[in-house]
Length: 164
Image 1 (cartoon, one colour):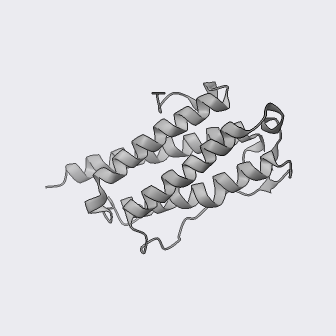
Image 2 (cartoon, rainbow, N blue to C red):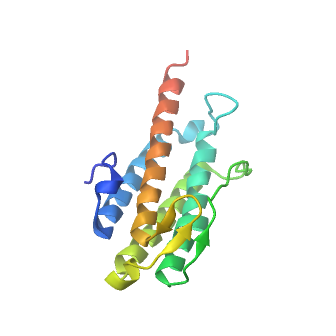
């Protein structure tokens, strides 16, 4: 299994990136399922809950990553803003449903990326924050996003366990 903590920038191929994304999905799912009975826990009022993080990750896969890599691969030469779903009300989303939907969408992302020809993998889009991006570049961003939230989740779990 690929190390989900390995630097994504050192991964050269879509195969390596998608394998790392698969491993990251497994870890993300395991961590979130372990706290499903405490899905509304948050360490402080400014922090997202486990439920909100799961729903955020689901929305990011469905509305951002999958859509954007398809646009890049289609040679649409898209221009992207920074994707944000901060401030959305995710209170109606059950953590388990979000994890399931995240995994389904992540599976579509991985399957699509692996199906692309070498020529389609060289196509680009322009991101206002990250500059010119290929599908592989977007997968690296996605993996980095996973790692940021995995680190945050692990810190949240430590705080939860430290409670009296």
